Image 1 (spheres, rainbow, N blue to C red):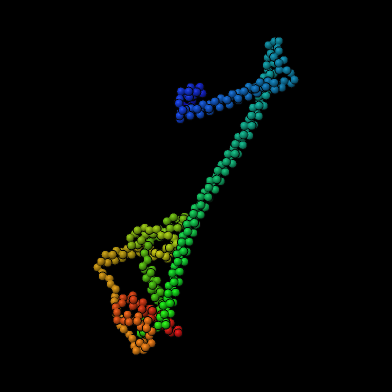
Image 2: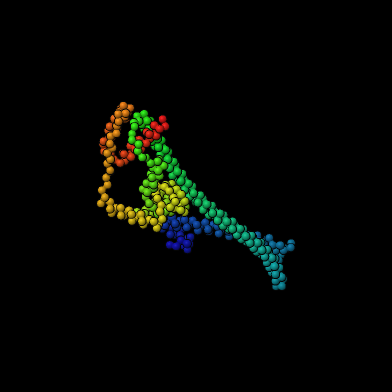
Length: 340
């Protein structure tokens, strides 16, 4: 049943036949709408009828009673009365139409102004909504950066505490070594600066090599994307692990070493060759035997603790790493003795 074209009587008849349900509710609602429309039309018609009844009484016949205009004793008198009444009515209707037209134009102008105001407010609303979205995105990005910076700060504090602990341990070792120093053979030790440069070079060469470093999201800028030179695999890198100008990526420093796209294949070839020959190379630690070096003077002046330690080292095989560590400790002892 088409509710838009059905009459009120048809809807009432159909409603009486239906049990409670969805269709019953739809027809009931439509019936209520039509009844409301009929009551509104009836009220409007009553108002119009009342106004029309008053219309004749409101006409101005210059003091003549309208009823007297219809008391005519001949056709000519009747025609004259008709023309007079018609002219008065036409004049009244003309004024009504002019007032209605003026009101209509005023309403149209008001509607146009309101529409323009509404359009302007809608545009401002859209602009404010866009600005709010941008600001929310910026706030989210700042919160992410703050979280990452806080985590990095905690890591740095932990690293500082670890380094301070190592410094304290080294100070204790130096103090103990100075107290129990023995005469040892002078060895050739590279300067601390050269060792530092060498260590830095080793660290740089051991870093994973990447290329094609760029932002994952150019707006958020909290993560990099890059390819590993060894495998061509694309990886994600937190922004705080790399520092420098992304416009010159090969100058950036951090957890990875950055090369150009042209240089990348050479590292991939080298990595492949190294994997192919790894099984053919037997790697082992070089063993070095440190000869015992004790003199009579050493036996008379050395403290028991250090002499015991030397006895466990002398003549026994040690690795090259252990030998280098012994050389470094000897250099520290010599340095303390020279200051004393």
